[in-house]
Amino acid sequence: MRYAIYFAPPADDRLSQTAARWLGRDAFTGETNELPALAGLDADTRQALTADPRRYGFHGTLKAPFALAQDRNEAELIAAFEAFAADLEPFEIPELTLHQLGPFFALVSATHCEALHDFAAQSVQYFEPFRAPLSDADMARRNPDKLPDRQREYLKTWGYPYVFEEFQFHLTLTGPVPGEAEKKMRTVLESTFADHIGKPLDVTSVALFVEPHRGAPFLVHSLLPLGGATQRKIA
Image (cartoon, rainbow, N blue to C red; front, side, top):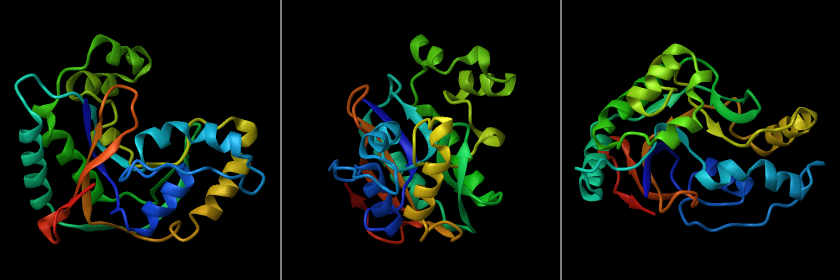
């Protein structure tokens, strides 16, 4: 089993519901739905190009997936997660925009958001004592020889290369999109997420996701409000 600390809006949030329909899977319930064709994007292509984010569930990475350290257990992690959420205050990302990160499409912050970067950095550091070292195979999957020196060092130290100043918040919407399909995909995504692009995003919660076994779809174990403002929500 692996765990991850992610940002995710609550299950009943409009963005969560739109994303679940787009990806064809709700990480809160595990329920799946068929993906019809959209604006010239046929159903099979849509299914293939959303396969990766569908497995992980709609989220923004804060602490990348990790196995538990040998001297830690799930109960300790959950207790730490509850304390972590209670100590943080909600904040707002001023504006979301659709962006292409290499071959992937994602919703990102349109401008630098210091509160968001602090949130991610605190997540990385706070949960590090719970992370087992990466296996040789996991390290190799990141192609460390192709990473810049700083990212390679972060991978060795923190288990993930994109932390601290290398962090790029993103709510992933696709896997790699071939060049010939990029224009069509952008059009479809701009229409699908029109109610959220160009708008602020309230960051009021943090989620603990679980991967029951390697390769399994990730599920929301718990979603907690920042600052303990409302009751705990369990998926």
